[in-house]
Length: 325
Image 1 (cartoon, rainbow, N blue to C red):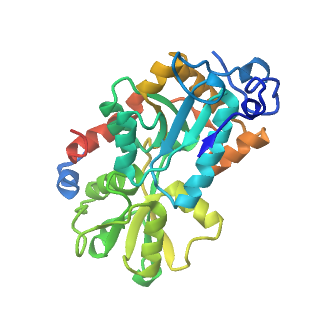
Image 2: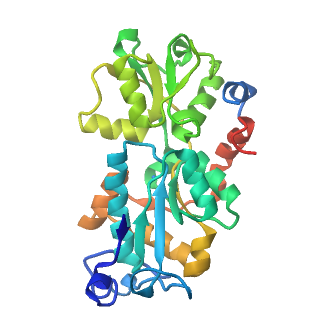
Image 3: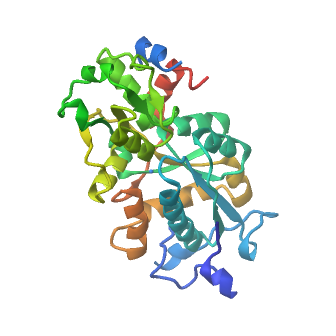
């Protein structure tokens, strides 16, 4: 889907005199893991497009994407709101392009088919390494202190605990194989407690997404699984978690999701683009109804600044697992 700025649709200057809309600022992994696995006023100025760029009103275009970590309809609702918000802030024609899996998001970013992507920690590292010049833009407040949660089917009889060792004897599923919160970091924490990350009966499953993990554990196809805490919290609050699924354990904290901007977008739209997009995300406020709609969909209070070095631990573990070469 492509969102064209409203003013551009009617022929007027994009994003001008719209004080109630977007405010746009100017200005030590273990060897066990390696064996286990082989989120007014002048601030409404639009971003100028580089010569030759295309899009509504000649202002250029931006294609956004995200790793498919939740149900497609959830993602469509979320990134439609993001596309509309960014379009109104920047005057760009913003397109959300869904992808089939985590690897496809990284590949599309590398080739320039996606400009701005919401990556997890691991996929963000992979993407930046494969696209020299890529810039980290922002993360949610919850991403500097992110957690995964292990869940079990109530038929296991297990109650909440910090001890992960009882999971070793259960049929277990991760999320996507390159999910930070659904595979990489949970495997790391399992190994720290002496649990072989791939030593589950029949071998571990890989559901493909956090929502799918919940469904598989609820059905009994797997007795236990792991997913990111934000999805668990939002599904629980909405009453969408099957009563057969119980929270078992919460991992220690780590950095996770973040927006990454590709070098091709900077080439087209100017060197100021990374900072201006970062300023846009950091200006989102719960006090503004339109901002709140976006923040609520992200499960965040606000976006905050981040830097590539925050993901050094994830890169180190990814290299141990052979997921980064």
